[in-house]
Length: 290
Image (cartoon, rainbow, N blue to C red; front, side, top):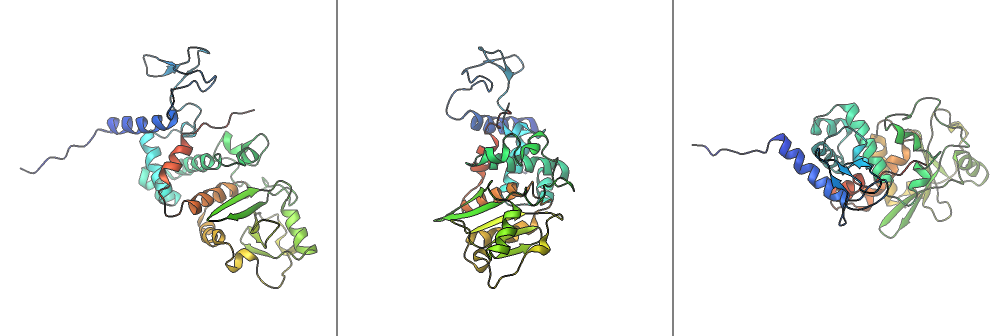
């Protein structure tokens, strides 16, 4: 007789996935209340937890990025694997068995989680910051016409290389208008790739980079002899990021930092397994609202 293959029922697979993610949420310490941080809550009959100090009822994923959508734990694990494999949104949706829209929203949450681990996270996610609207609804404000500020408000980022690592920083003192001004008055070379502008070296940065929209006066740019440093092979990160930026759908000035931070992670972990870093970000607490 042929040998029978025993497979785990779906509920067992989900329980195993929840156990894996819950362990990442807890880390090495005891369970803590997400509201007051008191350790060792007690377990209710339905499996939820209740804080003995403030009486808050919660579960292991409360207040964490992976609780921001309706995905099951095993779907999160599958989506994280698809993201690590650099699958497109459509490919990831097919791999996980969810709709395109659901995959798009969940991947936005994942990218927000990755970005939130950076040193400049609160500059991008804090009150009134560029990405704050996405915290209310990851699919919202994703590039509606009229949603972008004028050139004097479009954000600019700096690409900085240190050894084998790269960093991309928000530069709040600069705007798209600053880049146009530097181009005209200080002969700063600027290259255009669709809605993305990348400049020559600026101070310690290999390049300034920004994403505009149809309101940005691209015709105002002046061409200067030669190429920007990053365009001439001087910045390995830009060589890595440029073809990938072309593949992203829904690229807009607001979503641009999500993709930049994703590409920084991919570049810095190239040749390594990204999955542990991605799962750790998903299991991290979301920033608290002011």
